[in-house]
Amino acid sequence: MLSRCRPLLGTFVEITVPDGAEIAIAAAFAAVSHVQERMSFHEETSDLAAMRRAPPGDKVAVSAETVAVLSAALAFYRQSDGLFDITIGSDLVRDGFLPRPPGSLPGRCRGTSADIEIVDELHVRCHAPMLIDLGGIAKGYAVDQAVRALQAQGVIAGLVNAGGDMRMFGHEEWPIMLRDGDGRMREHLSLANCAIASSANLRDRRWRLGRWRTPHIGVNRAPVVARGRTTIVAPDCMTADAMTKIAMADRALAYALLASLSGQLFSERQRGAQH
Amino acid sequence: MARIDWISLLSLPALMATTSPAFSADYLTVADAQRILLPQAQSFAAYPVTLNPAQMAQIRAISGVAQRTAQPRVWRALVAGRTAGWVIVDEVVGKHEFITYATGITADGHVTGVEILSYRETKGGQVRDPRWRGLFRGKTVKDKFKLNQDIPNISGATLSCRNITDGVKRLLAIHAVALAQVG
Image 1 (cartoon, rainbow over the protein chains, first blue to last red):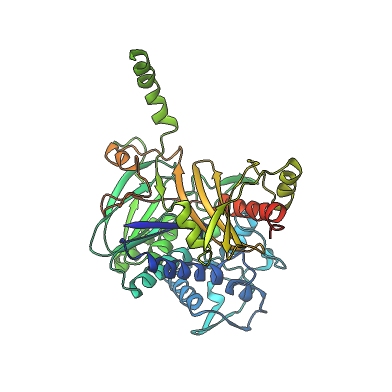
Image 2: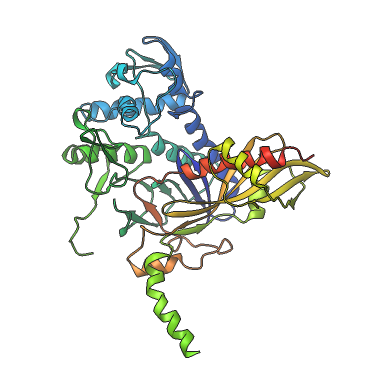
């Protein structure tokens, strides 16, 4: 096996394939780069920027991949009764986790996912001003796209890891360590042919103006202050990625949804328990 | 001899607790990275650069990031004796990590790619299970890892590559002040 690693999606993307298959790695990184270019919150040339600039109600041309992610995000929005909402961009800008896009007024961007319409495979429409952030789902999708690219090149086994959200394919089992909210690793799993994603915010939160600010927004748009790590194992990485956000905010809802998604939830053990 | 043994024994626990890498991986040699970043180059020649204080200040002004070493590790990519681009190998030190990476830059100052050469975690992520700890030691890029004995993959809160993004800005500034004029 050999691995390559590049800085992409704001994190480190590592691709591992069998010896002799390194030629396929370029296609996999290209698939990840494409997701970054189309779905970046920061890039003014992304599909998200085009949707932000368009007047509400206008049809906007976007890539097929962006439509795929938006469709999946809207399905999670409906299934979670609005808990998973990609229009939290304005909250994240307000709390300093994302930069304010040029020309935007985050205070006025009050649209929700219910205001997003998928017109067709290459067009969408936003019926209210909004700031969409795909940070809770696009990384997982990028991992899935990289795996599809490797498989299309005939690679029979491999692993794609985007900063801890990863998917592995082939018959062999892969050792996976779980990093707890405090940065330590106490547990590990052995997984084959599935995806895993984790979230934590112990080290990524701040107290400002009388309340906690975290990059995870939950029930009633309140920041989620999680005690520990939340890990989801699912058949694909987009599901695992999105479900970690739901599980952090509402554990019971996550259990209910995971039953139909063939997913599993692994929470960080409470401190004081033996290890 | 006995005294040396004692010193090494005494210093061992402290080393394990503070500087022992929790996770480390080697991805590419410098030569491999050069070929990936500038595949059209016929050869790469080490290009010694010593930045003067004025250039160091300029790099900081352009990139917003301080350049720590006055002697960056630069290779000149050549095609038929002419400059086809540059490869700079650089290091960034984060709160928990030490990363070596290579950036390819065209002769006119565009990034062709960034490849991580090695990643070392320094502290905060110590592995408790000694069965796992043993796996991290002494891995080099030449080792052919076997499945199941590979470097364990870690799932947790997402790591930021912000340091690398800032580093690449700094390398582009090095190109602008010290390499762009080279024919």
